[in-house]
Length: 522
Image (cartoon, rainbow, N blue to C red):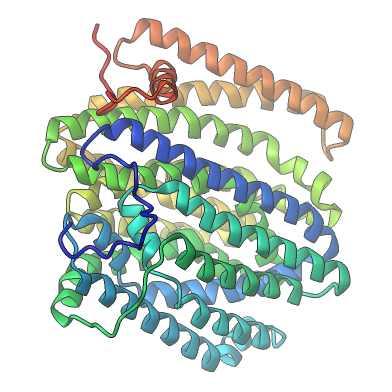
């Protein structure tokens, strides 16, 4: 690319074929690294939840969660979308790269200053004066994070997901180690804060090690305007997405208190596993891949439908297991003081499945230069959440907020269907035939687990009953897999298992002929 700032030798891109070659295999390999990143961070989270959950209280998690929500809220209000714009643009200049870095630094500084000044006001709204110093500490973290290299965005553009895995793995590991050590020594909410500080500092350093980018005193106003034209819709979308995913967290804290916020966020972290990991994995991997297919509509359509098959094949059954089995098991691992999460998990798991389905659209919309479609879809979901919040929370309390999230997101599905059909030239029956098998199999899986649980009354769950629950979960998973494989023998166009196995085999063998997900022939 002309003007592309390459790192000094050794070149990180050495041995990587041009982006137009072997796209399917590289996309799959990138997905594996993204999945590895998600799984590794989830394992760290599970470890920290078990250890820190017993050392600290739900209120401690709620106070830090309040600070995180404030940071995210300010972040979406100042969102530039420059990272996505750098990925979507086919060619970049040095002026655009340096400009993006300075804009990112200025944005981080603005968030830090505003959060520092507004800390007492935010703590007062939540009726938690102890949150003020925590908010100000997180404000300083924002300024530190603004120094991160622009290299990760460039590595993402080049689909160098292995390097990005190293970046996140280092940051998450140091975050956990520092938090656990401080919590063992000083059982205070500051263990969580110091973990965030350490993890952020490590990410800044590692970002320059992985991609030795050197900022320069260059700011191109024309490039800034052009990048923002693409990112302006992402700013609006980020605001809506924040409300759809974090708005309930905010309300749980302001309406029911810091303890409720801690319970809700802990339940969310577990219940939204498929969305936060597998769903985001497909989103991150397919955005740069779709960008390279945007001028080939037929190829784009075939690839999207195959990705949708694999996405629903994986995420729907995981959400079903979480909805019926995870909630009662959490207090066994976290301790009895977390019993309040049990009633929140089912609704959050259902909402996570809906959100994961909706998130298959944004990489397609961004790659084809239509971020406004994502904005419209998220607007419908937010409207749905607003309609359900008051009546459900008034009747069912904190659990009602969780159900308002699940039901409200569903209002975005009709627009998702319409926009996907428009961008891929697919038909509604094509989408239905792609989604229905996994949905039906997942409902069967949930029934295999839930019916024995109701018959044997395993509440509250004991370790013995947990073993029985695992047995029925395994039995249901086997039934689901056999059901899908049976459908593959009947429906020639539905082959998620076979396509996944073939793609793994081609990647493992190193063949250079996987340009896309291929459509099976009858």
